[in-house]
Length: 393
Image 1 (tube, rainbow, N blue to C red):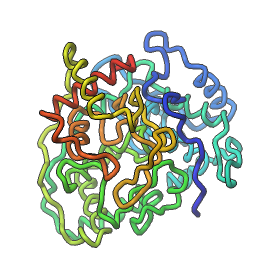
Image 2 (image 1 turned 135 degrees about the vertical axis):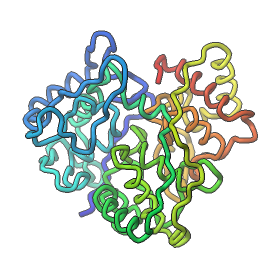
Image 3 (image 1 turned 90 degrees about the vertical axis):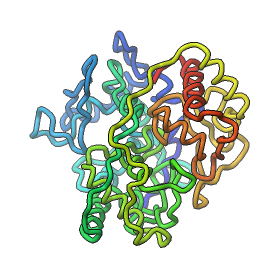
Image 4 (image 1 turned 120 degrees about the vertical axis):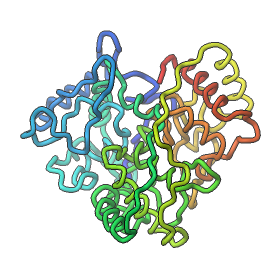
């Protein structure tokens, strides 16, 4: 079953209902925003607590155990996963699509559809009501008043180990099984980006048959880049979830399966090029001249033309232009660069540097010749954006 696109899945630029640029709740008092307060009332009225608990909570400091796909938590008998760390785990449009058709995004889900929270929009497409948006705002705030654990997760470069020696047929069989379970709903059984959930999402899922990808660390994307994106997902910037909970070998099996959809990449196996033995730490905040240099780079590179004056992203109409990504896919909104969770290619300084150096798909060009040292330029731009938003990563 293919469903029409959700309209209004993301707010206009500068007005994110649960956006990463505006913390969900006061970090000291835990006070909810107006939308979250209204969303909590919807959550209670709809009886979400009958199946979902909120026992998980980030500690004040130290390591956080991120939840798995269906976390068992302290109550193994409950029907739905614990939502205590749900805030910023997924994008607004994923959450809205999940409310509308949970059985499509999560095969086998017993969660009932909440289609009464949607109305017929333009052309009859389902459009979230104000209550649906408020409910999502509440979900996006869960756990964030104390600590934004998903921002911390995305601010680190993930570990990318070399793939183990294994028969390609065994790895491909494993990857096919995992793909059907986790990926086919959006990317389609044939890898063409036309899965049953695709039309519910703001950004079209990647068409793997073309063998062209948005985020890369060389002029031509490599296997390590696919592994990284499977690990991190695209945060709140678009609906691709993070599959960090899969084992290293499971993620490599998915990389191989994805490559097999493309005639140009089929049969090429896996490459260990670009793998790293250990993850990089998040870079400490640098005060001083970085911020001034960042503003100079922001102005000189013309970043506001596509991303808006505050860096929160724009629609093509707001920007007065159209963007076409790799394989001719239309880009419905430029990236929100103000927060680690909303940067689709990753929230680390290194991820920002990769985007500046190699571009993003075919919509954002490379600025390599104008940067000097890319990582220094990336850090300066991030400090400038964070200072403008009044919020850290």
